[in-house]
Structures are given as C-alpha cells and as structure tokens.
Length: 520
Ligand code: C2O
Ligand code: CU
Ligand code: CU
Image (cartoon, rainbow, N blue to C red; front, side, top):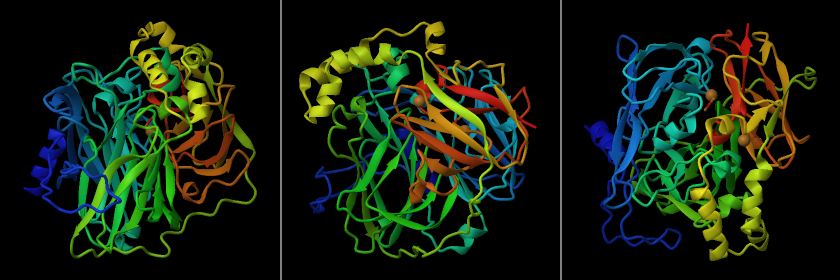
C-alpha cells in the first residue's frame, strides 16, 4: 500500500503535501505548502529472479493546469529503483511500449557488453529484451537510462531514468541510514524548460550541441521544490545528477556539513566532510547529514561557472528540496570508517589510451551567445534582463540542425561517433591507465566509461578531491584540463556489442562525442 501511494505520487508528479500552518525556520524557503517528495518505489526480483520493466508514454502535470507528455519506466515519469544484491543474478524482462526504439543501459554496472544496453541493443516498439545481469561489484547507487543513438537526450528529457541500488555485506554491516524514503532519501536532480503549451522544450540546435540542455526549472524526483519528511537523526541523501547537461553546487541552506560517504561506484573509505559539493551530469554522491535537532533546511544549488548555466533562476542560490526531519526514531549512524578500497599503486602503468573530447562547432555555437552579451554579463556578475532575453531566444529559437550536421558536431580523438567502428581494443582484467582531455574548447565534459568502475589518479596533475577518490564511472574535464584514471574491465565486450566511452552531456553524446571499444 505504501509503495502504491508512493508510486502514484511519483507518477502524478505534482502531488501536494499537507503541510499545515507550521512555522518554517528562517533557513527554509517560505512557501506555505510544498509538494511531497515522491519516493521511487523499490523493485526487487521475484522468487524466480525476475524483474519486469517497461517503458511507456504518459502525461504529468508539472505546471498547474498543464498536461506534459512524458515517458517513464513502469509509470509516467522516471521509474522505480531496482534493488539488487551483490552475488545476485536477475533476469530483466524489458518491454518497449514507446512509439520509438530505445535501449536500456545500466549505468555503472560491471557487466558484459551484450547485456550493457548500449546503442547496439535497440528494442523496437512493441518488442521485449531479456538480459541476464550478474551483479558482482560493491554496494553503490547506480542508474539506468536509454542509450539509443542518437536520441538519448530526447528520451531522457521525456523522463526515462531510474535508480539501481546494489547492497552488499558492507552495507549490511554498517549502520548507515537505510530505510528507503524514511532516512535514506533518493534525490534525482534534473532541469527542464517548458514550451508555451506546457510541453518539455527539446531542440537539437547549435546552442544545444555546444552547451547542452539549458533548463530553467529544477525538478527533484520529477517535482519542483518538493519537501522530504524524514526522521530526526542521521539522514542519507542519494544524489543523482540526472540532468542532460547541468552541473550543481549543492549546499545546505543553513551551512550544515555534508558528509560524503559514497561516489559513483560505491562507498568511500571514510566520510568526507564538506560544506558544498559539485555534481556533474550522470554522477552520484551519497551524503549523510545530521538531522538530529529536527531543524529543517533546504538543499540549495549555487551558481556554477559556465555562463549559460547562470541564467535565472540559476544566477543565485536555488532551493532544490526541503529536508524536514519530523519523525522520531532515527537509527542510522555515521560510521567513522566505511570500507577498504584497494590502494592505488605508487607506480602506475604507462598511459595506454588517450581520449580527447572534440567540439568541431563550438565557435559557431558560442559566437551568437557572445554577441548577445552572455560572457560580459557573466564577467560582471550582474544579471541583465535584456541579455537574458537575447540568450533565451538563441536557446529556444535557433533552428534544429540537420541530422548530418548534428551527428558530426562533436567527436572523440578527432572524429564523430561511428556506430559500427570500434575505435580501439583493450585486454580484459588488466590494470590500465587512461588519459582523458579536451581539445581547445575549454568546456566542461563529464566523461563516462562503460564496463568499469575506475579511480581518478590525476586531475590535471593534482590528486583528486577526497570525495572523488573512490570508485567512479564519470570524470569531469574542464578549462583545458585533463584527467588520468586507473581502470580495468573484468567482462568481455565484442565488436557487435562494444562498450561506450562518452561525454555524459547527452547533447554532446548524441552529436558525436562518443566512441566505442572492445574488451577481449
Ligand atoms: Cu549513463 Cu553511456 O551512459
Ligand atoms: Cu554507462
Ligand atoms: Cu561534453
């Protein structure tokens, strides 16, 4: 019953909570009533080890009185959380009830290429796909989403994304907050823009293929500025930046510490205490916050550097979600130490692979923005409504690119993605050092690699920040910098279903900033 009502909330999108005339603390935005945070229902395998998943079209009322056409997994928008255990084998029965072909990619799962759900595994409308997934990796917060080339961005924009949580002996042993939706709260952070008739804005024009999707409405679990009611005690927040392109600087409105306990692929060795954390498209961080006093707070996002991502409302702090610890009986703890990670060897192997992110049309994309005054506005730090109007017009009104132009706008190692040409081959189960960089564009690229969890060993020559030093499947590159990762691929991926390496700005991915490789 609880699951059902939660799921209805998720599907309904705009469910309104019942906050009465409660006095709000000064740290919390003063709306009279916040919609309740929808909690994606947990979906576990049946006794036969099966999980049924389907993608379908629906509608959600994001804006009062407007019905927005959406896609979702097992519901109208987003999806359930697939709850899996290390050592488990599950058979997924995926049904595509959409009018378009799609794929389901298990982002962060270490599984062979033939079940990875990349662009080589399209599922036609009306068809099923039944991959068997053997889970053999540490507890982590992963996610799943479409990977159909070249419409991943469009399908994610419509709502296709869900969480996948792995548990293991470590999470059994540690007393972390782990009551789903009570003191263990999933937060899928996204941004959207709506057209005048209430539909999702979505246009692959030159602004999009250079800058990615620029939304002006933040959504958390599909709702604008919701409120999560939690127990008093330690509360775990599982953050996923499920946006197509936007990064967030996440901070508590009252400045309380965020204890980062996990990154993309699992728990850290020990909690990392920070006042704010940066999260990029596709990344996950698990954070524990002290809610023992019962004082509510907002999770805010602060303005980021990228000028086009500082358009209002993101030119100042924006509340994403209110955390209101009202219930008694918080039992979770914040352990001083978490798990043992394999040490990064002092002596690294030589760099065996370079990946350079290319933008072939960045000047064409940036010039009109420059002319519109975006860069000078960013430098001045003062929002100018005339500039905002001109830039918004470019975002919204520039014409859709022809498919040929779209597919060749970006690239990796000098060429746009080609579906049937693996670019390189790697040997299975070897420890490899890769160098990832960008050409001359100086833009942000959160680069993701399939089939692995890696360690960042260099962020432009520096050690990674402590909260990015654990298991990762995305590494951000920006401002002409580079990264080196220590990576291995335990599973095979043949030429028919190779692994992908790509920028997780989905508009970059869909316009050529992706490559594929085999593991044998
Ligand atoms: Cu999250 Cu290749 O994708
Ligand atoms: Cu992936
Ligand atoms: Cu990119």
